[in-house]
Length: 335
Ligand code: NAI
Image (cartoon, rainbow, N blue to C red; front, side):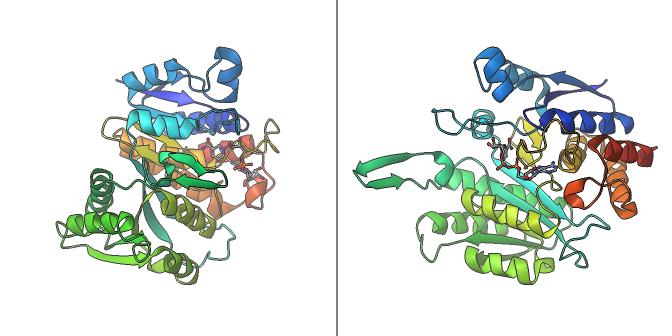
């Protein structure tokens, strides 16, 4: 039976990279069917809602989504779509694998980079609890709970065990935020004790950023609270060619939404120039998640082959191809 997947193309370049990714996934031969729903600026125009109820209705049935970038109007009281999806569906793990694609011309291209980043996705300063104490003084609450810290630590260690990774590094600022980051570390240590075969270490976030630039090849699995995770995962993406490349997954106990981490790229939207690699690599994770490991490996290998060959890359990574030209090359490599 075909796997039913919720497809949210999104705004800007979203529909272009989503269409490219759908073609590539179908070329793998995986038995998938798509249920397309709208979210973002287009949904606001068409339905009066940024995140219409039918998105949740669809995900309630399919449990798995593939999402393109969506535009959230700045100001005007609109909650971020991504934050709303994560909170409502309990997608507490943000997972970002960071690997070097062959042939890509980045400063770090000769290093064997292979990191798996686990960012807590539901709390910390992203709880959105801000208020004005007195005029000229605002307060933003950093929420760290034992429950959320334990489950993100478990997600990181379980991944490390399943994929035979050697080391998990917890990143923190507990020297300053002794209670909040202190609790996060305490939870990581508690979980680490249950995985004696995996090396566990801790780094203060500022030092971690420096080490990531100086010797990124020494990092393996990383686990971080929400804010540091947001910043450090983009830093890591920069090491392997940027946000147009790296995939992302938001995973909870019952649902998972796979998405590129770049935005809607309004400067190139509609021009056929967008690089669909990030969403295609997110689909690689999706295929593995739904139990299609062969299709997942086939798509990953095809993307790697097109990069190694280098003749059909898009402009953002130094090539001259269109979105369609790159996608055709990936499909040819699958065949
Ligand atoms: P952006 O990621 O859209 O663009 C930054 C730069 O990267 C631009 O020059 C763009 O052309 C380029 N770029 C991004 N993705 C690319 C791709 N796949 N291929 C080729 N070039 C690519 O970031 P920006 O400009 O800060 O945000 C634009 C809009 O996107 C905003 O409305 C923002 O709210 C939204 N956004 C949505 C996200 C999501 O839904 N996950 C994440 C980040 C931003």
